[in-house]
Amino acid sequence: MSEPVTRRRGDALRSDILGAVLDELRDHGYSGVTYDGVARRAHTSKPVLYRRWRSRAHLVLDALTAQLASVTPAPDTGNLRGDLIALLQLMRVRFDSAGAQALRGIVADADAELRSVVVELTDAFADEISRTVLQRARDRGELGPAPLPPLVSSVPVILFRHELLLTDEPSDKRIEEIVDTACLPLMHAATRWPVRAST
Amino acid sequence: MSEPVTRRRGDALRSDILGAVLDELRDHGYSGVTYDGVARRAHTSKPVLYRRWRSRAHLVLDALTAQLASVTPAPDTGNLRGDLIALLQLMRVRFDSAGAQALRGIVADADAELRSVVVELTDAFADEISRTVLQRARDRGELGPAPLPPLVSSVPVILFRHELLLTDEPSDKRIEEIVDTACLPLMHAATRWPVRAST
DNA sequence: GTCGCTAAGATACGGCAAGTATTCAATTGA
DNA sequence: TCAATTGAATACTTGCCGTATCTTAGCGAC
Image 1 (spheres, each protein chain N blue to C red):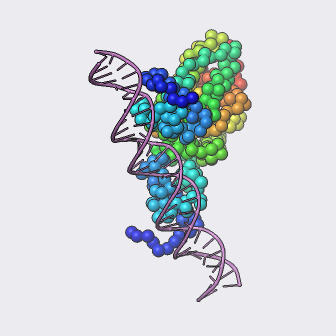
Image 2: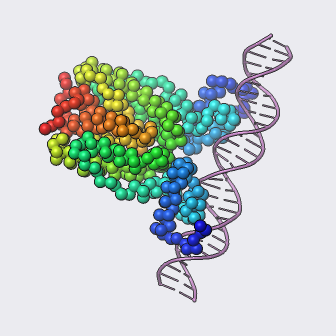
Image 3: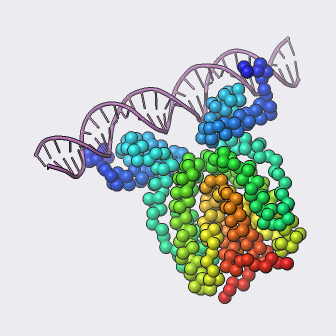
């Protein structure tokens, strides 16, 4: 088990390091991810890490991004409600307890620019929603033909991300509540908004 | 400017310390709030701080809570839209750039229990919304008489809090977008939900 | 008033991780 | 084969954490 004599370079080294970051994340949590620890686990050294990542937030975010690179296709359950629930459940799997903790840490450490990368990362799912799921709902006649405002189609992901950051792992019950009392009413309303206020 | 000979105790000491925390927060940001720095600024010592607060997150959260203790009454602009916008603008003032940074730091450092305190703190505004603003809207006939589900009346605060945590200071434009394309349609819909889908 | 308890305040220390500097060696490509 | 690049090992300074120790001021009981 001693050090291999061969010396890694470039992308091979990079992905070994990011793998070590994910391991450290599972074992010690976000605040427990240290340059020393990652260097030890990846059998490399601190200067190598500092040459590539300016801060722990950058390091962990890159590791998470690599892990989440593949966007799973939206499940087709036959109706909009089922599709939305399935998507949020999928998101819950991807951002489990350790992932959520990492997101909170990154958001706290990062500047505005890096925070926007966090948003983009989680928004991969929002795109999936607005492109696939909503189009299918329109095809089925569940929603009117008018395109939804971007904010509206992001609402499921926004509410879920808020839940992820501020509370614990959202339960199935909570996911259904989000979909049933917020997302669906809003989406139906948005396809026929503005409505005369009940004067 | 040398040390006063008198030795503070109890609440007087406590509020001096929390004031020093707020000063350190403005000057050095959340991660720059250190026990050493606060002790120096408040002319006291680290053990005094550790006796009262277990972590920086607890310390800063107490300081923020003290600062935000008074809930400003909801402004009455004459209509629901104006009231919601005014409330979010008020919230933006209370949680300015330094406040938002502090919230991100606390959320990252805190366990689930302390995170719920963060939610409660910001939800003081949600209560104000659901109790006062929505009741006035019902009285005016802007909304139907049916009570809104808790999640729905929290949506303005949730969307704003999400914005505060993940992006920068929300602009007036963004606040209006949140109110016009999400909150108002949802609230109107919720008073007459379920609706026949647009078959 | 004086006695005694509690808690404030000052200081010091051990530990850990950040971030950088220095040096050596392996890989690569010309 | 040689030179440039970059991985790897190590050491060092600094800053903060969290705790222990000790002195002394404030405050209540008698």
